[in-house]
Length: 450
Length: 171
Image 1 (cartoon, rainbow over the protein chains, first blue to last red):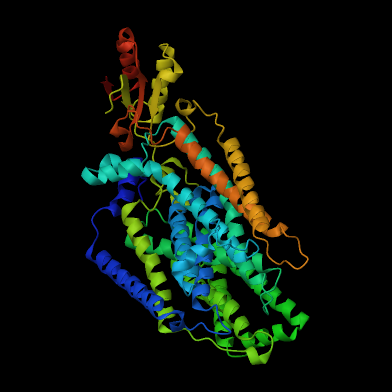
Image 2: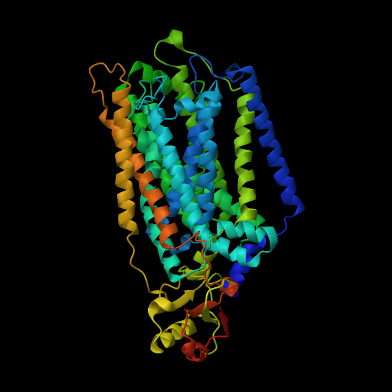
């Protein structure tokens, strides 16, 4: 394959921003329809009351909090991975980072809506916010739910900044090629970028600082989400390993989501020359490491409960191993370990298709894991008289489907508005994996005299 | 094109642009008057090496300290102002206070970094600045702002000899 000139790279990556096909609009309409039905379900819940959801004593956290933890976890795909690769100066990251960072921003925004959806009276959500109130209802700083407020907002700010800053030079590229209203809009978003050495240098410095700042924030976010559980004296929740266990699971599901998103972008935006097999292989190796780490954490957590032999914890233990939740538990193990491990460990199977199959398994498995952390513990809390069950209603299922559709919808709209691969980073960076990347190697600027 | 007095050349690549800058320096043009614009950072070339000193990391640290102080005060004063029954535990609980302080430290550092970038990179500024859209099409702009009237020809010939494909001027 011929090497690409910087101008060809620009043209290739700006091409998806042009006219959309009929298939694109059909898919967009489908996802928009699912989102609208989810909004209708939520409106019904607001009108009729939280009773239309399946959450009731003793299981007050069901699908909504499962989704909250799942989406916050998924958000670790982008900013964290991108920041680590940036600090490690991994040159292969260049086509991957923006696809990943977008997942973070959208997944985090979707996840953050769930505590509000979960409230019986969402119009009183502002009571959660830490503001001075003469009614004396300042929120309790000791509550992990309030820590979530700070952590998620800090991570959202960091992630949006981490996504938007490197977009500025690309916005200027589009501004200079656009006409009319588009030129005006992209001109505003480009913030007056001209590409002076000072601007480039300040941007690089800002990105380095952001990368350093955002990694501990990402770790803290999912640690705090885990403490929503671990701070409560609920069987199988009150565990010291919950924070690293959650962080590991978050990165695990995040990488899987990134691989799926990259495969879809590669196919539908025809980015085969940019999102190479090398990128999937490298992310596949990371996914393999996280799969092993996840299995280790599950084993360590179960082992400790088993040796502790606390009656209330053993009730939850058995209900997930052999009881009513066991099919979901073993399906989770199959999805998170049994399927991905051989696919990702055997080089021959670690193809793009293989990585996608493993990733789909992981996303399903990680959603099940969040469900299995929440529901079995709440439905089997201490004394048997307080045991109960939980069944999601159509309202919860519709809202859950709506969030997946919202993710797809937002991603599709973004990919038509902004280059999904950072053009300037791709043009300016050397590609080191020569066998795959020669196609991407930007050829030097043609200068006869030089 | 903005109404700033300038003369510049559009270069096809970084090597000739580098020569252009060196030629301007050799012609006695002061560094602060030399204009450079490109659609890539070109960090390895000397023509982009000017103005690399920045206080941004230190300002981020200062922003972090300010954010952390706000976080500490918010957490502490809330617990003091609205005391709840804590059953012999400290009224100002250290762990939650540390968590809120930590999160707002990072918040402060991020916000400060963004503000510093906007100010020091002169983004969002309303004053007209020299620019040519050819930069977005891969050309490298090298020029001089406010050149002296009697030096315009010398600048133009320096740029041309260095390999500029086009010479333009604005006033």
